[in-house]
Amino acid sequence: MDLTYSRKHQDLQAEIRAFIKGEGHRSPSFGGGRKRPDQQRLDWQALLLQRGYIARTVPREYGGYGAEPDVLENAIIADEFSKAGISPGYLDVGALIVVPSLLELGTREQCERWVRTTLTCETIWCIGNSEPGSGSDMANAKTKAVVEGDEFVINGQKIWTSSAHFADMMFLLCRTEPEAPKHKGLSYLLLPMDSPGIEVRPLVTMTERPEFNETFLTDVRVPTDQIVMGRGDGWKVAIASLKHERVMLGDPNKQLKRFQSIRELMQETKIDGVAVIEMPEYRDRLLRLQGEVLAAKYHNMRLLTLHDQGAEPGVVGLIQKYFATTLNHRLSALAVDVLGEAGLPYDPHEVAEDDPATTWQIDYMYDIGLIIGGGTSQIQKNIISERGLGMPREPKAQVPAGRG
Image (cartoon, rainbow, N blue to C red; front, top):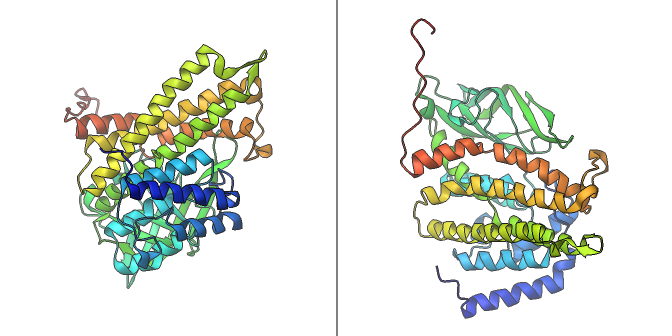
C-alpha cells in the first residue's frame, strides 16, 4: 500500500483544512446517535454531502458525491475531521448498512427511493435481524412472511432492534419459504415502521437507559415488491449486510477520536499535582492502545483497497468486528480508570453529551453490548477459525444411548 500523498491528495487535505477552519464551528457535538438527529445535525449532514465528505463514492443520481473510489481520500477526510474534533456526520445503520447493501443488491427503483433520503436523514432505519431464541444464528429466523394477493403478511418478533423507537423503516429478515432449507428460505423486506401491527417496546440496558428495543409484528402487511433480490435470497443479502455491519462496528475513525480524547483527558487530569499521562502505568496502557488503534486504521485501509479491487477479503475481513469491539471497550476502560472517583458516580437521568465523566461510563457499558451484538466474540472466533483458517468444526457432543 502506497501511502505517499500525491498532488491531488495534498490539495484535498488543504481543502478540508480550509473547510474545517471556515465551517467547523457549525459541527454538532459528538454523540447524539441514540436519537433522531436535530436540526443542527441535519444542516451539518447536508453540508458534508454537498462537499463530498460523506457518501463520497455514492452515485450522484442517488444523492451522493459521485467520486471514484480512492482509499487515501477517505483516509485524509477521516484524519482531518478526527484531528479537528468535529463530527463526521450522522452515520447510522441506514447510511452504513442499508445504503451499501441496496447499492450492491437492490434494484434501481429501490436505490432511487431510499438512498438519497437515508443519506439526508429524512429516512431513519433499524435492522430486524436478531430474534429471541436464535442467539447469533441469524439463519434460524422464525419471523414469517406469507403472501396474500400482492402483499406479504408478517408475523413474528425481533429483538435488539436499535433505533426502532424512532425509525421510519426496518430492514427485515424473515422466512418466506418455510419448506426450503434453513439458509434458503429467507428474504429481506423493506418495511415501514408506521405499518399497522407493529409494536415497539424499549429494552433497558445496564446503562439504565433504553438503548435497544424488542419489536412485535402481528399481521403486518407490505407489498410484495418491497423485497431485496428475490424470495429465498435473504441469506445472500444477510452476508452482504453483515459485511457492512462489521465495517460500521469496526470504524477506526471513531477509535482515533476516542484515543485523542483519552490522551487529552490524561493530560488534563492530575493526581497529587502530576498529570496522569506522566504516570508510567497509565502511559504504558495508552501507548499499547495507540498501537492497536493505528493497526485498526491501516487494517481498514487494507480492506477498503481490497473492496475497490473487487477482491474477497477472506479472513482479513472476518477479524475486524472482533478486534474493533474489544478495542473500543479497552479504550473506554482506560478513560474510566483515568477519571478515578469522578468516574464512579452515575445517574442515567443526568447524562450530558459534553460531560466526559458520564459519557465515558455510558460507552464503557454500551461497548460490552457491542461485543455481544452482531455476533458474539466467541462466535466471531469460531467463524475466523473455521471459515478463515480452515480449521475443523468443534465436534458435537454424543448423547449417551437411552438419554435422548
